[in-house]
Length: 267
Image (cartoon, rainbow, N blue to C red; front, side):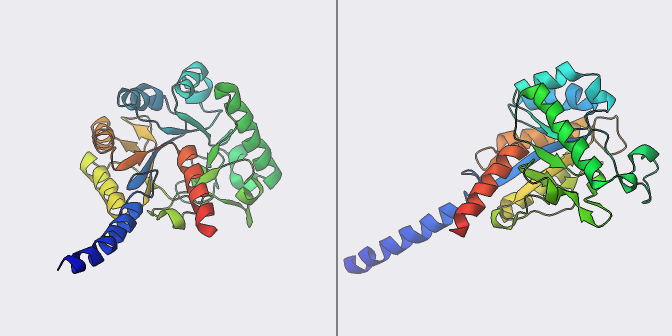
């Protein structure tokens, strides 16, 4: 009997070791969650950042430099960057394809249909210069405006991969770490969900050991796509309460970690 026990103990130890490694793929956590906020809204500064700071969580804020919530509050965004939040690139003027249903809000001058690839590259790179003036950083992530990824038949991100660590699209998926496409990152756009529904998404990510990116616009108002303050607060508190299992990170840090992990797995 003693021989049998000695024979099986190493096997059990190895199985346990493999399981532990699988369960901590995300920076020693079970899953990764990224909180992203688009369009440089006043409510991001007034509502989202204060509760993030109170819980010592960091968000990723995709700024469109020309928008009033950015251009008129430069010092507030500078302070947000100094407190560790990611100031990320959402272009100068937020151009979108203008002839799709529901796109009446796109000004004629900023219809992506009327852009050249060169103009898109120039404006996006200029936004990086603008952001560096705010926080002094070089590494950036990008978010496609309206989720539009092409000008005509040209995927412009292919020409900007040296400018960005990663780029977030607009499609719902929770990929495992080895399945992430860093220049076509998925996300869950939030509009009206309850705190319980947001937490349910996190629980799915925990179960799948996956990446979950939230996309917020309004937080307690200011945008037609909106999450209530209560729902947003419930989500953040859940993330904080479960930080032993959940890595709530900035997009730039999570993307760098994914890139390193994928590179190591290829060897």
